[in-house]
Length: 529
Image (tube, rainbow, N blue to C red; front, side):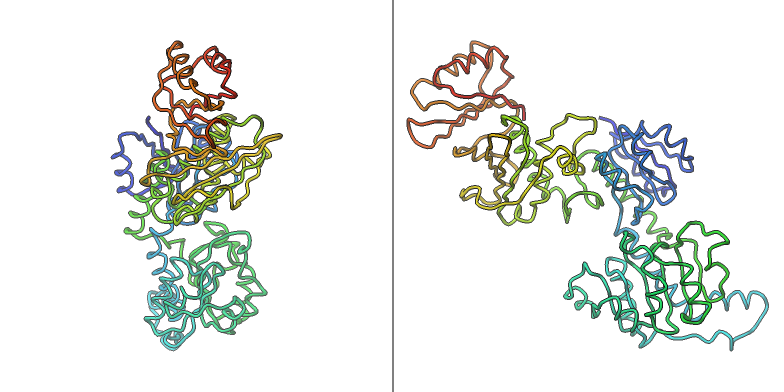
């Protein structure tokens, strides 16, 4: 299969060369396309790579019939309608680590520039002036820096601040106190950070809760004469409130690399203020960062299209930490269980109960749930089902999922069990991975077995009496169907038995009917796994 990728923003030469290395990829590099032009061609592509210029809107995603992956060469994805992408099962990826160092260094540069009036002094001297006394600044040593958002960039900024002899406070609800303490940083509440910091630097994500996080109220909580640095996202700041604080002297200065609307117009209240250091969104603009960001997003998009890796996916309904290949076999096992549940169900599945226990799968319940739902929903419908949209599509179809315990007492490491419930019936399935890679079904309802869930499978219940295996084998042979493997489970001799039979070809309707007509056979279904 050949994947078509559109690059609609400027990407570094190294990244473009990387695209050429993949034999199953063809790429069109067309930066600067207008909205209507993009809408007209987006349906031709499997993948889209953007930076901050392209606006990936809901209507564009609706028109993108083949599109499976949108890759953002950078961290922020506010130019992508992530919610709409998720509904269409489109993976949205970013590169959070590739430009962290560049952004951290720039943020620290802005702090130094604002403290020592470097841009203003430069312009003054450039104009032939010598006004040393007007540019008396302040040093960073023994000052307090407040870091809002203690992720990759925030931590790098904190490390550099400590090297300058600064005290560092951090606010981030998602960070454990131990993490901050390891870097010699004190984790505090936002109110305390604002009140105690000489400098406040923003490194938090832009989400609804952080829009205009810095506003008239929070600025009022800051120290008089503090300096604000924003190299994260412009919409984190109420620019009008910041401008008023700078004019009144409440804040001594601000250093800004990002704006609520880019490029900023002359109407932006910060433009032209003498105590503001401005940059045109240069946070990731180093040769090293641009090279790394481009190469990384190319590799990620290709891997996602191939289905081999989904690292740094922002809309996956579960966390992907570390190597995706380590959890992929468990997702595939879960998906197989879901397909088997759907194939064996005697009605429309309404609820899935999930149990996962073991060192690995115990932490993957949400991921396993998405895999089971993907299998249950199958390939039908207008929108292809994948791990991204399976939970949402299942909810729309009235299928609920719950985590439970006590579904079985099998003693396997990393066992995944699920019970499907439909009107008037239910079924329990359990599976494991042998050797970390070979899927096996180890329980169907009360029957224990070790069956290979691949290809065409005949699941049959029968009375445990002599001659059944011979009759079934002969009948299938008469219809030209070869048996690859036969696994049987029973609760007690002479009771009911269950067979899991791998077939080399799918039996005809007549063959299945003849099978059911065998007096000892009580139920038989064929499932393609």
